[in-house]
Image (cartoon, rainbow, N blue to C red; front, side, top):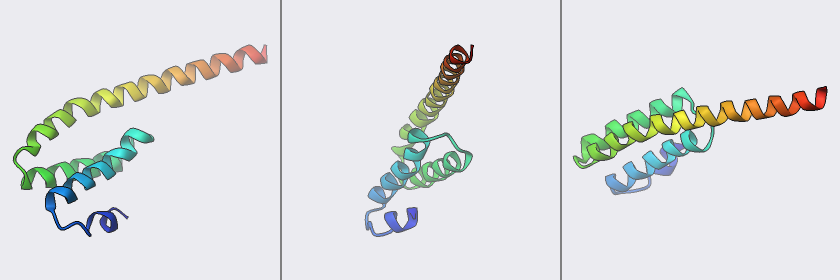
Length: 92
């Protein structure tokens, strides 16, 4: 699916940016999965080999993505805690 969306673009810059967006969106919008993170890493490496300024983007992503993952995990834990405490109140 990603290849079909990315391939029609002639510009490698536009193709790389589109590839990064497509692979980053599932990570941020849904659960954090290993294939999504791996494909994001591959897209970042591919993009960086063609554009030197992309190293700044990758360094930013290396800093931002773990923070987002941590926030996601903390929000999931809080959500589970609130859901379980809400369920316990109705059971008693």
